[in-house]
Length: 196
Image (tube, one colour):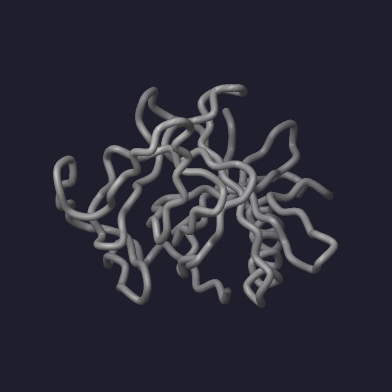
C-alpha cells in the first residue's frame, strides 16, 4: 500500500503568472489525466517556498518511513535567480477537476476557457509527500485557484470569455481563504504556519 503525507499550506500564493504548462481547464492526458501549470517567482517568496518544500519533504519522508529523494523537487532554479515551480495533481475521479476554481468575486468557475501562458492566479495548495520504492518525493498540489487575470487562447475565434456572476455560476459555501480571508475552523487545525 502506498504511503503519503499531505501538508496544507496556510498562506496562499498571490499573483502567480503561469508559464509553460497551463492545464486548469482540462487535464493533460499524455501521462494519465493530470492538471499542471508552472509559475516563475522572482521575489523573496521564491527562496522561502523552495526552503519550505525541502523542509516538508525531509519531515514527511521521516514520517512515512522513506528516504527523501536527493535531487527531484517540484522547482527549477533559473539563471536570473528566479525559481520556476511546477504545480501538478492527478485526476482522482474521471471527468472531475481535483481542485476548485474561482473568479475574483469568489464565484465558482464552471465553464473555464482555454487559459494560456500569462494567466495570473492566486493559489491555495498542499505539499504532497509520497513514497515509491522507499524513496519519498514531494509535489505541489493546488486545492483552490482564483483567476486574477485570464490570458485566453482563442485560436481563430475572436470570441472571449467573461468572468463574474452570471449564467453557469453558483454560490458555494465554505470557499478558500484568499487575500486575508480566514480559513474555515476545521482547516485551521490541520494547516501548519509556513512563512512564505
